[in-house]
Image 1: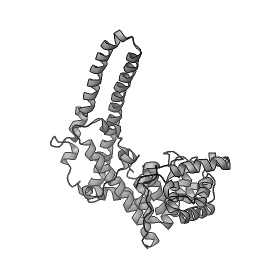
Image 2 (image 1 turned 120 degrees about the vertical axis):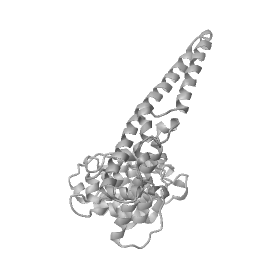
Image 3 (image 1 turned 180 degrees about the vertical axis):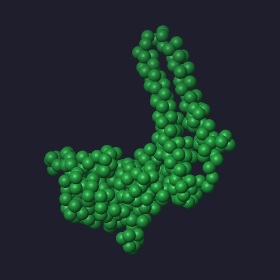
Image 4 (image 1 turned 135 degrees about the horizontal axis):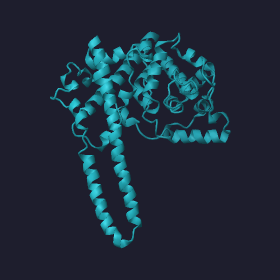
Length: 352
């Protein structure tokens, strides 16, 4: 549901402690104590704090950017959830990704599937560089003020604590794998459907193809550690094979990435048009009265042209041909790719 966290969260001593101490360099044991105490006190607020940690380290992943120490604290929180409340983690992946990144969700799966070895969280954290965090030097008054502001936010209100089912530890990692594969397969299918749209509106240009840019590639780090590409392919095409692997790389990810590049270019063109219109409007407002009539006429013509471009915005012919059914485009001729359509839809694009 909507609304801020404050309505039902008044006793927050343990969650406040988690807020203050979840900083670079916090020890594993201490962090686990903080998570357990915060969860017992107010699980919804604790879950919101876990997601908030994912916003502190940027989009860089733990492997490629070892100085993003706050991001690693976020991964520690995710692993605590995976160990103790795996259903809650699995059911909130989309919402967590909207605050952190899709790449971070792949990292979480990698750590869950690799409790030991080079791809485990513990090994990745061994070489971490300590970072700076404002909470380490803030006064108690400043910490309380910032925490109270966080509690009043509605940003994390959609996170949901779910009833946990008793399950074997090994099963929880498999459940997380299925949830991650569902998230990416559904997101990619939605983006394929959007790319095939003939006539699109201005909203089309405002929504980036995030799954195309954030999906794992065969043989990459996450795929090698988890076999996640196979899970995504199975959901997209109904089976895993060499042909399906090629289709995933060429017809799905590569084409969507090309469409995203076109979208960015067209988005910039339309934004420049509207920026020019606003600049001209400011000039008209400051012009002498006798000049405003002619200037307003020119502005109206410009505005109608922009509105028409937004209303009838079309992909360039070279791109449109690739996705228009019946013209020999790759998606039109591909068979067996509709299995994901019956799956539950996600709203990652609207959540960010």
